[in-house]
Amino acid sequence: MKTTNLLRTSALLFSLFLSSLSFAQATNNSDNWELLLEDNGVTMYGKKAECQMEGSDLPGVYAFLKVTNDNPTARNINFSFGLQFEEGCSGCNDGSEFTYLVNVPANSSVEGDCGLQTEGLSRIIDNPNLAGGWNYQSIKIFNVLID
Figure 1 (tube, one colour):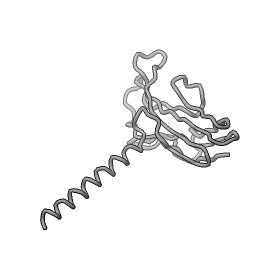
Figure 2 (tube, helix red, strand yellow):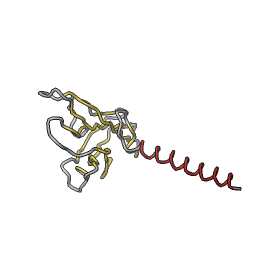
Figure 3 (cartoon, helix red, strand yellow):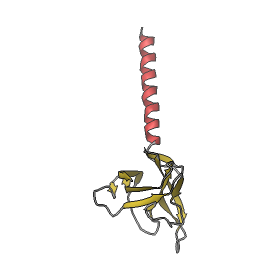
Figure 4 (tube, helix red, strand yellow):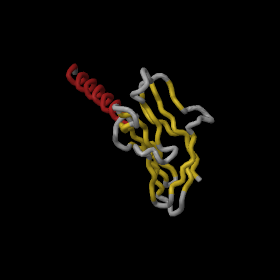
């Protein structure tokens, strides 16, 4: 009887451990594209990556978005691009300066990269030239309107 209870307790603890790992993977702390939103044929992904900064020996760390439109017509996506830190969320309030409108042509995608050419698809997380800074946790996308 005690062995059965011990096995059940061990199985429960192992299940909780696996669940916590699955949840942790959804926070976007890696260099791979991770799903952030899927709605009406539009998919948004996020990732972080290091990029060489002009005039600096050390790379900066950036958050990038990729927006895919699987519809037969172009879509305008209006959204707020927030960054969650341990100390708080940057750009997560209504009327934030980090609210963007991005047009994605039919059956295609647009994405941010180290070239920083597409407005609204990149934000700096950590600048090595500035002392201190906040501790990054994840990308937050909210107030999404698809037109």
